[in-house]
Image: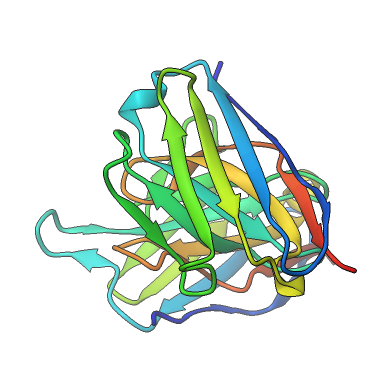
Length: 113
Length: 118
């Protein structure tokens, strides 16, 4: 089965600073037929369902602030928040979905320093 | 506005059964693959199952294969998850999600809590 590992498990960043979360999959998320990476990022705040932020590794979902960006290809991906805001405190998950089983990373807890 | 509303959760004894429902509105339900994703209390997300738009293809996580069945009624805009032989480790909030498409989830319900305990 595919293993998806996020790093770090938790992260504390000052307001206005950059936050970077990494995601590594044990198999490539790149589908050769369409040259797209089937890797997405979600944000989950306490008591709420997850919210889709980024899909296909780097495409921002409608309505997501442009301080959120995704990059990477193959097995290594990154979610970057360019200037941390208080409302960004949450747990972030990456998701591998090239075929099944669809697999989530373990999550990264982001807090304010 | 897209809405997904789960129901059917509750307390069930080990070995018991439960059927979850997800009522969909605000989009053409019959055009979309749908998924169930679960989250044990205080823990991370686990994909459970998916079903094709017309119901002809279903896929399951190994942890639930043979015990859970996903189905849908496109006339009623409703997704189901029949859960049998429930175990303590099935305790979780169960979310209904709409496929992006491609396997991601662009809309999530609020979830329904399933507790398996004696």
